[in-house]
Structure formats: structure tokens, C-alpha cells
Amino acid sequence: MTRPLYVFRPEPGLSVTLETAAAQGLEASGCPLFEVEPVEWTVPPADEFAGLLVGSSNVFRHGGKQLDKLASLPVYAVGEATADGAREKGFIVLRTGKGGLQKLIDNMSGKERHLLRLAGEAMVDLDPPEGITIDTRVVYRTAPLDLASNIASMMRESGGVALLHSGEAAKRLRAECERLGIDRSAITLAVLGPRIAELAGDGWEAVHTAPQPLDVELLAMAQALCQ
Image (cartoon, rainbow, N blue to C red; front, side):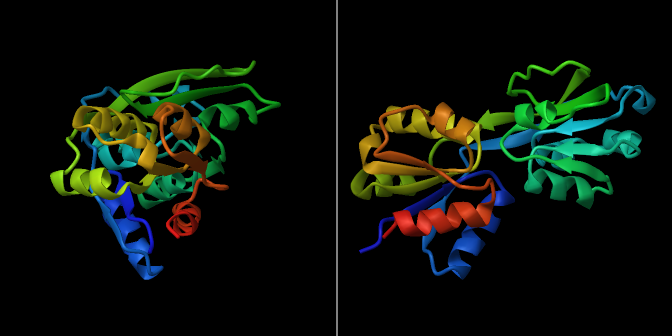
């Protein structure tokens, strides 16, 4: 008997992952644990910067028309999903990282760069290496949502495997399990990266990190964990 599989991410990512899981023969249920909403922000002059530092595709999804004023700047993207979001908006991606924004900027060497970081309200603190300076603009925020009652019932009764694509989802799932009295020791987490595992905390049955921060890698790992 296979274990239940849950996906917790906002739309449109939720539907994409559920469809990909179904194509691989996996039965998955899910719901958003937060929603992403734009915030008002002021665009600085593009010619002051050597590029855009972006840690989420939500920047391009919710940044609004102000992004058009920065289209001349190349993008340093945290991962493939963010890079794809940039390209869809007409940006040129200069570099795509693996392993987080800190690792991405640590690998920028040999040239001074002044970067504009576009981010969400809850962002990772960065320690720029010598030669790298960063200005930041917040372009979106997240608003918490309750765990869907049917998903909560399934988790309480059967445990299972939960897919987490972000640190925000990890924190929300932990909080909702505590609020609703769901036993975390019956739930295995499959997460997209080490920071997500860290933010999820302890008390889970197990926490497994995908070998690469890609949805297909996460689902492949989850398929094995559900057996």
C-alpha cells in the first residue's frame, strides 16, 4: 500500500506539480498554505546596477509593470524555475545558481558588481563577498492560509509524505500541524533544498532533500518515499 502524498505550494505551482505527479502515476492531494500578493514598490534607475539578483519566480509573477524599466538588466537567478520566470518576461538570464542565493553571489568573482535584489517581504539574509554590493526592493509578500480540512483529516489519520518547495511552506505546515494536533512523527518531508529542511524544524518522521532543486527530482524522491 502506498503512502498518501501531499503538495503544499501556491498556484500556479500547485496545479503544475499535481499534474506532473499524475503523469508519473502518483496520486497526490494538496492545497496552498499561503498566497502571494504584490506590494507597491519604487523602481530605481536601471543604469545604477550591473544586474538583478532574484530568488523567486514570484518576483516576475507579481512585480508588475515596474519590471519593464529594468528589462535591460541581466538576471542572476537562484534556480531554474526563477530563470524560466525571468525569460517569460523577456529578461536575459546571465547566471542560474544551485544551492541558494548566498552560494550564487559567492561564486561571482573577479569583478565588482552593484546588484539590485528583487525579493519577497520574508527574505534570506545575505553576506555579499568583497566587490559585491546589493540594494533591495521588496515586490511581494505572502499571506498565510489554513490547511484544508480534508487534507488535515488525511494527514491526521494516515500520515504520509509531504512535498515542500519553499521555506514559507515549511514554516506554515509546521504551524498548522501544531495548531490542528497533527502528529508530525507520522509525516515524512521531501523538500527542495537544505534551507527548507532547516526551516521545517524537527519532530518529523524523516526529512529528505532533493539531489537537485528541481520539481522532477523532488517527485522522483517522493515516489520512492511513498512505497
